[in-house]
Length: 422
Image (tube, rainbow, N blue to C red; front, side, top):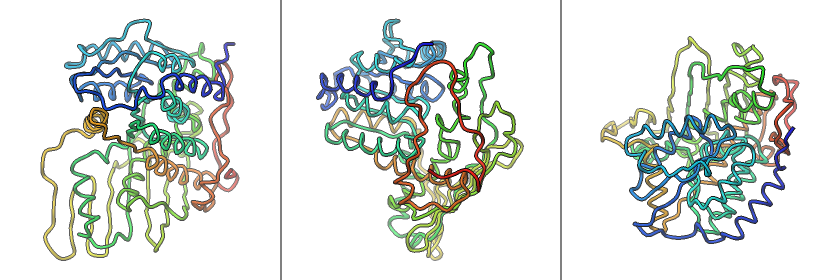
């Protein structure tokens, strides 16, 4: 069995890379300078992020790719070669295609300027820290962690990025959508009065499953089906519903909840192939002044789908996904202008900021939204009321100390009232 370096050794090695390139990313790049991009995590989201990034600026090249599985990397590279306006920006040679647990460290040493972190969320705190220490600008997909230990690490990395004048753009993409920006601006301007409550839903059907193979070790099976293991995905309230949670914090001017009570379970994901995550959650977050966020998410086939954010104020209401404001008195408003895809805009603004020296840093905000989602998960898993203070101090640390192919045990399905909050 080949064992990869521990997280401590990994970060120490990456720090050595950072010491040699302390100021490599802290620059305002001339418009004609070619920025080199490294893609980390070559699944569907990673491939999509690479396309978005490469279309954001004429002077970009994708020069390195990394995935724990080489077959996933090659599938991504093949797909990118077929994309119009992208193929000519590919400069990924075989010696800059990295796989295995050591691949990320090798990518950081390949002289890239910008790193796209699109691996499963469990890896993100470690990889973000290493990328910032190595002097790289970063696009970091959401959520940024799966546990409180990871969130604390991300906050430290975000502060380090500020010190080093490095951009850190989060994959909480709704904040880069023009219609939602205008809608939230009007809420902040008081068009619906004071926000009293938000009702958020992310109700969808079933997602992908990559199958089973008797040749796969337990670790390989979990990595190929990462969504269904909390140490990798955070459960789907963290991996998917975090979008709604981030929008709620945005509307509430960055506030964090005082406490949360939640329920959830596993009604249709009864087969062991679905790992140990739930298939539905319902959470009530309590904020100062009696404000509440009612948060509902579900991934069950054959049910009503609904993805919405309904904001209720003292003088009206707003629908974020519909970009509408309806004051109790006065004229309703709807955002009707055409908008560029938010997936493109976040990369447009990231690269433009690197060019101009106008640094983006979404790190601490993304960490707080991620922790709020983790709070809802733990309230459901335990069946207990959890306070924000308890969540910040949580000793939960789900990610293995070392990564190795072979056996990898995971906890059973959480049982509310029995599972303990750590």
